[in-house]
Each structure stands twice: as structure tokens, then as C-alpha cells.
Image 1: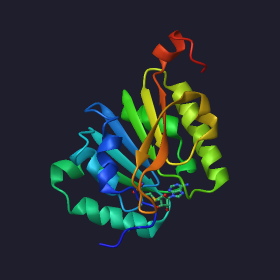
Image 2 (image 1 turned 60 degrees about the vertical axis):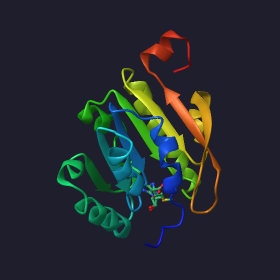
Image 3 (image 1 turned 90 degrees about the vertical axis):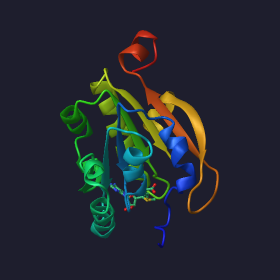
Image 4 (image 1 turned 180 degrees about the horizontal axis):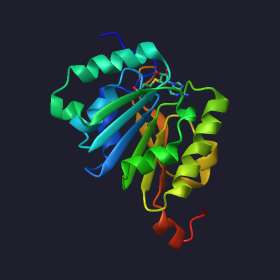
Length: 182
Ligand SMILES: C[S@@+](CC[C@H](N)C(=O)[O-])C[C@H]1O[C@@H](n2cnc3c(N)ncnc32)[C@H](O)[C@@H]1O
């Protein structure tokens, strides 16, 4: 199967899933063909996964992938069409009542303005949901989260092996108590 330019390779899925557990809602911001979104449930053990994709042709491919999966897996995954920045992330997360969220954001090719709006959107959600543990993995730095950078991981991408990516974490109330800036 031909790869969409810019995807994360399967060889690095486990490195992302190491940041997840069975309480994690996996949110793929720009889900493309949906491969890592589906794998987050099948391999990563996430209890639910959402992929948001701006372009209809890509979304169609992810819907076809979803239709090919076992029913019990299908019921845990959804793909939504749209620009991520048009979604009210905080309201969406409240509706899922999750306690742990991993946002995977393969944003190397996103426009600068998109990345800036997106990182502010992430930060608003972090601040509005102090009881939710939020982890963001981004392939390009997110300026509005720079003070919450906790790690870097090397991920294999279709354009290059070992692409250094950022991990931002926010543990809500426990970080506030520990004096981490809100
Ligand atoms: C590099 S692909 C990543 C696919 C998949 N997440 C992966 O890592 O294998 C990035 C995807 O983000 C989508 N995208 C770009 N800007 C977006 C936005 N503002 N909202 C939603 N999707 C977007 C692109 O159409 C593309 O399919």
C-alpha cells in the first residue's frame, strides 16, 4: 500500500503507545489514513481513539480502514472531518469524560499559523480540565506549550528515520500544586 507522505512508521508506534494506558483517550490531530489512530486501540490498548482530518479523501481512506476492523474495535474509534482548530477541544474532551488524553500531532507540514492556533487550543484545554492528564506528542515544537516540554523522543517517519519529536505533559491539579506555571 502506498504511504501518505509524512506518516509515522509502524516501527515507532510502540514509542508513542508507551505514553498511553487503558485509561487513555488517543486523539490524532491530522489523522490522515488513520493507521496510528486505529493501532492506538488495537496495539496501544487505549480505550478510545479519535482522528480528526481536514481533507475528505484522507478521511475516506481512514473510514475504509475502520470498516475493515473487527466490530468491537470499530466501536472504540471514530474519524471526524474538519479543521482541528474549528473544534472546541475543551467541549469535546468534556463530552468524553476522559481522565487521560494523548494528543498525537504529526504537524511538521502544518502551516505556522495553524500550529500556533492549535497549541493555544491545547493550552486552553489543559487549563480548563485540571483533572485530566494531558500528553501531547508533536513532530514540530508547539510554542504555546514550551514551558510544558518534558521529553523528546525519536520517531521514524516516512521522510526520515529518527525524527526528534517533542513530548509535552500536563498533570493538571498535581502540577498546579507542585508550582508548575498554569
Ligand atoms: C503527516 S499526516 C499525519 C497522518 C498520521 N497522523 C500519521 O502521523 O501517520 C498530517 C495530516 O494532517 C492533516 N491536517 C493538516 N492540517 C490539519 C488541520 N488543521 N486539521 C486537521 N487535519 C489537518 C493533513 O491533511 C494530513 O492528512
